[in-house]
Length: 316
Image (cartoon, rainbow, N blue to C red; front, side, top):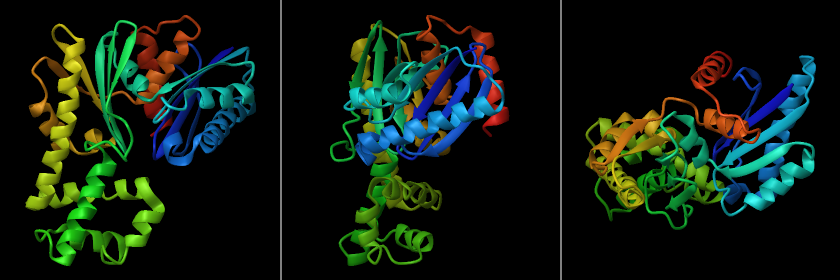
C-alpha cells in the first residue's frame, strides 16, 4: 500500500497523519512545535522525524505493509530552512518521496476553491501567501522581530506592553494588569524574566487575555485588536495586485478560528474583491492534498470528505 504522510507544523504544535490514497487516516500523531525559526532547524528535523516514526510504528503495529511513502511537510517558518528540513527528512527516510514547504501551502490547498487563492494565517505568527498560476508570493511573515501585527505573538506582546505601561504609570489603566496576574499568579512586572526566557510561544499565550478584556469593554484591549486587524487587512490589500478580479481569501490559524471578533473585523476591513472564507477544514488536509500530488494524484470531493470524516472521528 502507498502511504501518504501529511504534516502541518506550527510554532506551538505539529499534527501528522498517515493516509491511504482514498483519504482513510491510518495513523495520527500530535507533538510540539516545529518552526525552525523558534527552535532551530536541527531541533525541527528531530521533531518531524520523531513524528513520522510514530506514524510508521502505528502502521506496523496494525499490520499495514508499505510499498511507497510520500511525505509532504508544510511547516511554519520553513521558507528559510526548506533545504535543511528536506535533507533531514530525506536522510531519515531515504526511500520516501519528500517535499517541504511553508505551512501556508497547507492552508491554500485545504479548501476546494481552485488554484488561484490567497491565504492569510494568523496563529502564533502571521503571514499572507498569494497563489496565482504556478507562483506563490509571500507577503509579511518575516518573523516576530520584524512583523508588526496580526499574530498571537504581537497581540500578546501588545498586551504585556500595555500592562507594563499601566503598571509603572506611563499608560492608560487596563484590565490586562488583573487578567495577567490571575493567569500567572504574579504581577506583570514580577514575571518579566519569564517573558524573556520563554519567548515567543509564551508571549503568544497572552493573546487570549486581550479578547477576554475586550469583552468587558476595556478600551486598551479593543485598540490592540483593532491595530492588529488593520495590519492583517493590509496584507490582504497587498495581495490584490496579483489578481485581476475577485479572489478567494482563506483565513486560518488559531486567532481567526478561536476569536470571531478578530475574523469579523478583518473581514470588514478587507478589500472588496477578497472573498473571505473562514477555513473549516484542518490545514493538515491541505498537506494531504499536496502529498497526493507527489504521486501525481488529484483528490476528488469523495477523497476530501473521507479524510474529513476520519479526521473528525480520530483526531478530536
